[in-house]
Amino acid sequence: MTKRGSGRTTAALVLASVLVDEGASVVIIDADANQPLAQWAADAQLPETLTVIGDVDEENILETIAEQAAHKQFVIVELEGSPNLATSYAMSLSNLIFIPIQASHLDASEAAKTLKLVDRQRKTLRGQLHCMVFWPRANAAIQTSSAKDIQNQFAEALSSERRSGPCSFSARP
Ligand SMILES: Nc1ncnc2c1ncn2[C@@H]1O[C@H](COP(=O)(O)OP(=O)(O)O)[C@@H](O)[C@H]1O
Ligand SMILES: [Mg+2]
Image 1 (cartoon, rainbow, N blue to C red):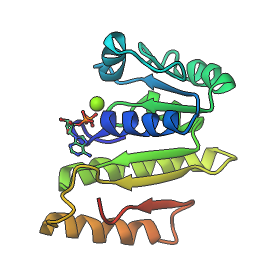
Image 2 (cartoon, protein in one colour):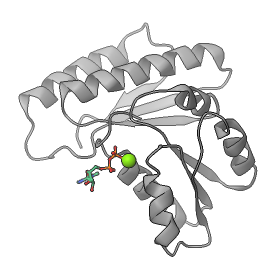
Image 3 (spheres, rainbow, N blue to C red):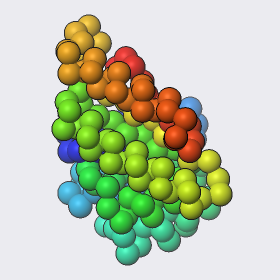
């Protein structure tokens, strides 16, 4: 996941809500030091099929994901804005990486760092690691010149033959 304010927490919660509505059992692991979802969950009345686990960092993230994956259908991990060791560990146990960005060059360059990490992880993983870059906060009606530029650069980079696995870029919000 990428820079603060790009919509990570909101996207994690929306994804979890949709899956719970469809009848799935879901856990959100909050590995963001600010604990946005763990703090929210402390005061929220959650459905039985949704749990939120806080206080997760590089020390315990591998065990926590493995334990939860044994009895939950979906494990969603919210990570720090900039990739760190916990990000690498979480990626090593993931099937799909979501990278929300804002339509700014600063955000796009953070996303590019995360994509490089995805590529490095793919070299050490046996399974497929899919990823998706998207911009949840962009205005669908107005496309800025920065957004167009970022869109073109990502589309080109993600279709490059040098990439070692599937990655998609949602061109529209
Ligand atoms: N899809 C969206 N549409 C409109 N506003 C959004 C959307 N996603 C997030 N926001 C708003 O953007 C701000 C940052 O979102 P947040 O999910 O907290 O980002 P992050 O977790 O990356 O820091 C919040 O005020 C949130 O309400
Ligand atoms: Mg957040």
